[in-house]
Image 1 (tube, rainbow, N blue to C red):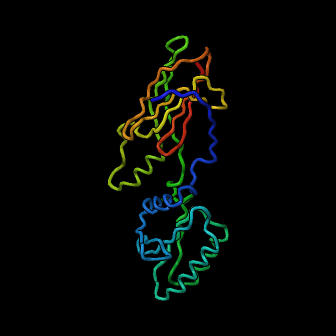
Image 2: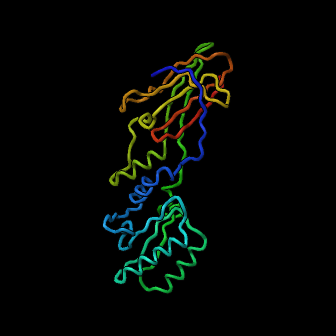
Image 3: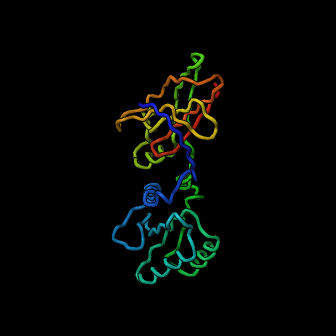
Length: 241
């Protein structure tokens, strides 16, 4: 635990940047859907049931060019009689009529799409639910307050842990396991976050304390408590005391 006296501002572009997590996102989708990976195939990523699976790069929607590459690959495999499942984050409007035409024309190698944004069975994987914190603040003196983190939940962390186990749902023994850092500004101006107190566990298995006695500079100060989870997502609670 340490005390600091410096200022910084954080600007978040979006909640969940799949571009930064391309390999991880694909691997998680494989586990989430239940795809069996194949390392010997240079084009297809695995199979689902009897279907071959092709995962489209999550950084762009399924396009007609992607379909053409698939068709070109199938032409090289004259003996391939399995149907195809395409996994994508989204698709261009022109894709549906082209797949309908393909499926009507060819009796084998029919194409099915799992679109992770909208699929009823699998779509919840990429629906981002923001982390939430329950924080209590109590004024104990003219210039002192006690801040206590009562609860914290990160749906993204829980979802990832549940994907990693197929036997049971993960139970978090202590909500503090999901918290990486707690930062406190005792005179927040709604603009720049001035860190006057930080709780950063020194060792990997240590937990944040979760209860802090903080001095405030003047009556009616705004106190901001910023909680950062293990995946880097931030939650900020602001109180006027």
